[in-house]
Figure (cartoon, rainbow, N blue to C red):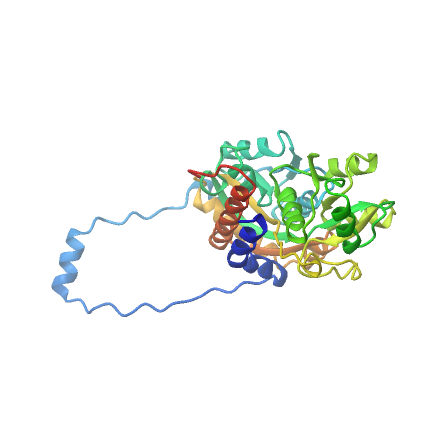
Amino acid sequence: MKLKKIVAMVMATAMVGSLAACSSGSSTAETTTAAPAPAETEASKEEAEATEAPAEEAAPSADAVWPKDTVQFTVPASPGGGTDIASRIVADYMQRTTGQAFTVVNDTTGGNTVAVENCADAASDGSELMFFHVSTLMSYYQGKITVNPLEDLTIICSIGCQEPGWLVVPAEAEYNTGEEFIEYCKANPKSVTAGVTMGGNSQAIIQCFADDVGIELNYVDAGNEADWITAMMSGSIDACILSPSTAVQYIEAGTFKPIVIAAAERSEAYPDVESFADLGSDVNWVNEFFLYGPKDMDEGVVDAICDAVVAMGDDEGVKESFAEANNILNCLGHDEAVERFANYAATAKVMSEAMGYDVSGK
């Protein structure tokens, strides 16, 4: 089965709701009413109480106060990109509202994998958190990390998502639209080199798009977003997908031009630029931001972090800052974040398997 068909099938069930929730900034919860239990007699009540083991009440631990001191956000992304900007907006808000210092540390060592491994060994008091999107799952299913983010880390909460990326090319490229790009690639198979993080979201998105529209590209591992920019300016690559917050400055400077919006709809900022859907592709992967911590974090600490994040969701200044950076603010608590992350995990596993990675036993 082709990659695009597999991805489309899983995304239809697991990912569409995620994009809708990010875009709307709200969520709904289903409620159910349990059937009434059979009436108990006094005798049956006493008998049950006599045989039941006494329930243990979990008292809040001393660690439930958050933050106690300086908090570090580790960001496995380069400075200046969409993820980095979002992390700094959140850190600034938390510092202003809690009175404690928040620092952001960018760590792209090992293709973003070292930060994930370090997160698993971080302090459980919430002083060391990782701010990143769902590409951790790609790294796991493709064998880049041994840490299973869904099981070996705490998915604390969700903080929104990036707007869909843009496929950009050098301003001097001879194609100016998505249709012209496709025509050129069909006439010159594998002549266009796409810069990606091999095995990551970027490769999956471009490869699915290429499969959908029937073109062959040459894929090279060009590092991260900041590296792709450098590579394209030097002529080492011919195309890449950039986050809108990064792409717009180079588009306005006349260095790059947008060819396609990697989404089902066009961008309001560039309505003349075709979307993936316009060109016959149904690829749609949402880069949703999560706060991660080590496994078995104190529940009180997790609740305290979630309370602070959910409160941030109502802050108009943060909303405006996110929008200016082409990000969407949508703050969700622990339970809903875990459920959404599990949906991403199912999708990432299928995508990785379709790209030729062995996901058996994972």
